[in-house]
Image (cartoon, rainbow, N blue to C red):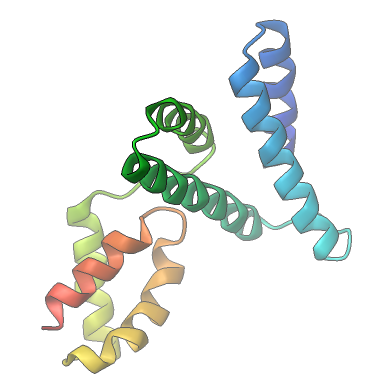
Length: 148
C-alpha cells in the first residue's frame, strides 16, 4: 500500500477514535506529500520521494523541538514530541549507531577518503545509502570522527 493510502486509512481511524493530535499530524503529512506531488507535475511520488518528504518533516520538527527547548517552552516541546512520535510511525526503521558506523567505514573505503577535506565526497556517496534510515547529524558526526 502506498504511503498516501496508509495515511488515508490511519486518518479515518483517527477520526473514529477522536485522536485530534494524530489526525492533525496525518493531515499535515498528507498535505506535504500532495504538495510535493503537485510540484512533480501531478504524478504519484516514488517511495524515495515520499521518504524525502517524511525526512524533511522529521527534520523540521527536530529543529523546532531544539529551538523550543532552548527557549524554555515546555508546552510546545510536548506538542512537537507528540507530533514527532506520529511522524516516525511512517518512517522506515532507523539504523543503530553501529550499523551506520559500518556503512560509514564501507563508504570511506569505497571513496578512498583519508583526510577531513574528503568529508563532502563521503557524505555525497553515503547519504543515499542511509536516506530516511539514519539521522544526518549522526552520519556527519561519524564521518568527521573517522576522517580526523
